[in-house]
Length: 443
Image 1 (cartoon, rainbow, N blue to C red):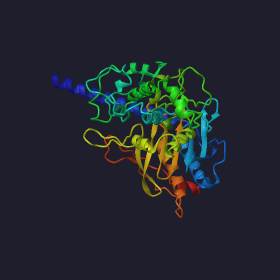
Image 2: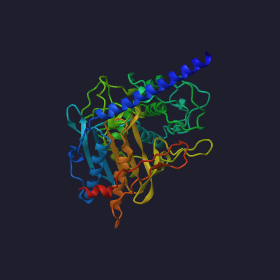
Image 3: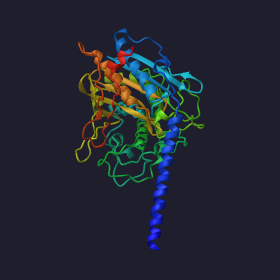
Image 4: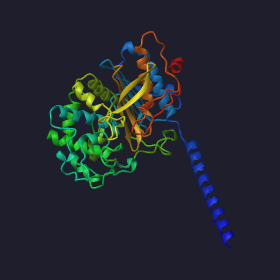
């Protein structure tokens, strides 16, 4: 009897597993069959530019346009926007596709996008300004500036928070608390401050959006004015970043792209969900992830950083130096800046910048290449877009044109990775589907 019962249970488990697998495959097949291409023909993708690119970069721009159109259709994205700066000036900015699918509003260079986690580079610059004025010290305990943060078993410093070494937890992405509103930055502490640290600060790397809420609160305290006011007066206005501001769940914001999320498997190729009926509120995240911007504004910022127009060179080096664990292992991340190594102009090249996630998936990539004087920013209005590989391919097109006497080409299957062996334990590999040379032949 016992043996028969066991055999029955095994059969039921096998049947249940088979039914579940069949259901998953059926759902996958249905979503694939019903996915509608948003842009069936790359050459029919609408685009908007407010000025002609500089003639010296016409060839690189044309190749980059083909890259943008190919990725927009290949990833089935509603819209993309791009800007490129070379040698201290913006040489090209253009929007592709739809900022709003329902109303057929085109993406333009001044269309504002949610930049999510890429907000941290802007906040890092604010910290840099206050370091130069002697109002902040990286190795001070955060409670020096934000006494509302509870005492923990170990001291937590500003440096550890900025380098994601603090042990402070992080939010749950698209499942996080996105309905609460904060008037002042310090109010965001209620999301996490009472929770225990995940580990002793300095011993591990763990990305933390919550940690940068604390960084934003420290900026507010040291500046002695509201965080967003300081950002506007000291960072955005001096650099002409007129389209960069905090997102809002209540105020109408002109030229803001409608944000979408993939309807299945966190993959835009299956098409976007309808926009949320209720706007999410990012006010509590402050400098961790609450900003809207445009690629042009991000490139202005990157050019100012690389050109020493906002911060002193020593401060920039301090912020962009990879942090180390107590063990001595490098993290591959600075103080609000992500450090990468990419293939550019046939050489391994240092890239400094940040990707931005919204609702758990990538929506923006901001990359600077100080050795080449190139800055690239690519934004998308749907989560889980691979903006990073697009930005790298575009940088490759412009870097190749800067090298005299060389054919413009990108090695197929180009490998892009973090600093090897870093403490983050993650290596990014992006396969370039087609070389720029192949794309150029299509013209």
